[in-house]
Structure formats: C-alpha cells, structure tokens
Length: 392
Image (tube, rainbow, N blue to C red; front, top):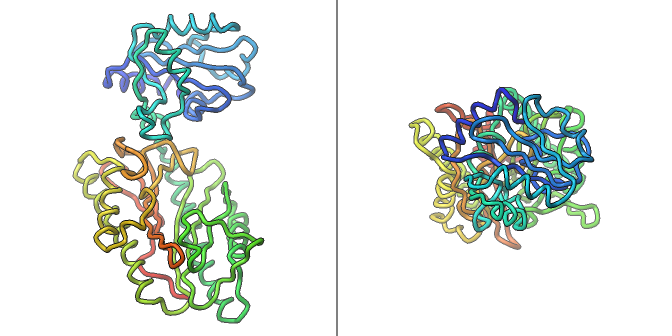
C-alpha cells in the first residue's frame, strides 16, 4: 500500500522513468493492482482514480456516496469528489492533461497480468489529453516485491509444503504395496487435511495425477472419476499453501511406485536438468549484477528440453510470479513463450520455476521450485529440492 513514507521512493522512480505520474483506476475489482496499491476498505461500487504525481501530493477521484472506503487516505493528500460523469471527466482532465502517465496497460496485451484497464477508460484518459504508457516496472517495484517478513513466511511455508509432499508420496507407496491403493482425489484430500493441521491456507486443492493423467498440466482429481494410484505408476503432486497473510510456496514433486521405466527416467532427467539450467542462468546473472528478464530464464529452461527432443511437449511458460498477495501474481513471470515478458527480475521479486513435459496418453512430468531474488543473491525453495525421482 502506498503511504507517505513510501511516496518519495515512488516519485523518484517516476522521475527516473520520465513520467509525470501514475494513474490508478479501478471499478468493481477489475484492477486488483490498484486495489492493492491503494489499500481501500469497504464498499466501492463506482469508478475510482488516484493520481500519484511526480512531485506534490497524490489526488484521489472519489464518488460522493462512497467516502468511507477512503478513511485511511492520508491527511494532506487531496480528495476530489464527483457525482456526475461530466464532473468525473472534467476532474480527470485537470489532473492529467498534457502529462505522460503510467497505467495498468500492456501494449498488444503482451502481458495479460498487467493489462487491467478497460479500453474505454484508456480512451477517456487519452481524450483528457494524457499520453499513456505501461506501469509495468512500477508494478514490479511497488506492488510485487516481498518484504523481509514475506520472505520469512515463504521460507517457513516452503519447508512444510515440501515435507507434506514427501509424506504424501510415501503414503501412496505404502498403500499400493499393501494392496489398499488410495485414489488420486483421496490423496489430494489427505494433503489438504495436513495443511489445515499445520495452520496453512490454500486457494484450491492440489493436483494429484497418476500415470497418463499427469500429461494434463491442470488435471483435477475427482471422486466422480476415481483413479487409484498403483504400483508401476509415475505420480505427480503439485501443491501450494501459505501461512495466513503470508506468501505462497508452490511446488511440484515426482515419484515412481516401483522401478521407473527408461522412458520415464529420460523424461524426468530432461525436466530436472531444464529446471537446474534455469536456476543456474538466474544465479549467474544476479550474482554478476547483470540485468535479467523472466524471458531469459524461460529460454534457458526451454533450450534444455528442446535439445533432449521434448520441445513440442513443453506447452506452458517456465514459471509465474508469486507476489505478496497472490499465488499467480502480477510481478514478472518466467516467460518468453505464452507472453512477451520483458520486465526485469529486480531484488524483492519471487516466482516459480517449473518446466514440464506432457505427452498425451503416455506420461507427464513437472518439477517446480520457487526462487526469490535478493541483492546479488538468489534463494531457491524448498531448501532440499528434488534431484531424483522419489521411489516409493
């Protein structure tokens, strides 16, 4: 949330980018970035704007009947009120006419996570006489980055998630060997119950996929189509959780119930080595103080899988942003495949690294860790991430 203490840093960033201001817009939650930056509480059903200028006090444009949500707007910052559309448009014109401003807009929808402002609102702002550019780097720096407390929370959650994954793999193996096989959806419920016992929260049940089901990256186990996990299966477990108010840990683990086939081993090694190539490329650039984009790290992982002959089966980006609010966040993604991600991985951002190979009807494998960029360092979680297929 933008506060008087943070305002000087934000205004300095605006000056460095040769911007006259950052114009935040929201309507019914269409722009969660604006909601997170402004930190509003209470009913907001009308259009809102907030202009953070390069110098001087921020100005909010608020509807007359919805003043309660702005009770935490700092004293000394301005608040313009409107009721009619022409008052709104005239107020906006006075604020932005002749200015170069940033908004949550991504030219050509290059990065959908940034493309939050409706086309009609962009037309309104441009008609008011403003030049609009993307707020991409501002979003990274003032919305997506973690605090020290966020990192500490993530580290704790990562170890609990990793332990749960290993125990779930072992439990599936034990049940298979005993002849009392557990189904995918039952193991998913077992995982969520363990998370609850550890005080962790999650937004969606985990993915538990056995055999060829793992070839669907977003597979959902179901009691309506139960599939038991049996000896001979390759098992994928993708699970995520966080402490209440903390930052998510998001991991994917691979196991084999019995000796894996040479084909399964080949696919696993391609995925693992792609993950490790991405980590190595990230660490090399960060430790040497070089600019690194999410696109660069996606390229590093994809090159390995392509060289191993599985390029056509790696059908998604290498990783997604994990910001301080959302599992699939609005910070830089590890992507040069689905979107044109040009943002810099600056200190304070976190994300997943999760290459995968998905051969329909045969096999699917993914290995997922998380990474956090510090000042000249990279932290990968969990601490002891997977090197070999887990044999259970």
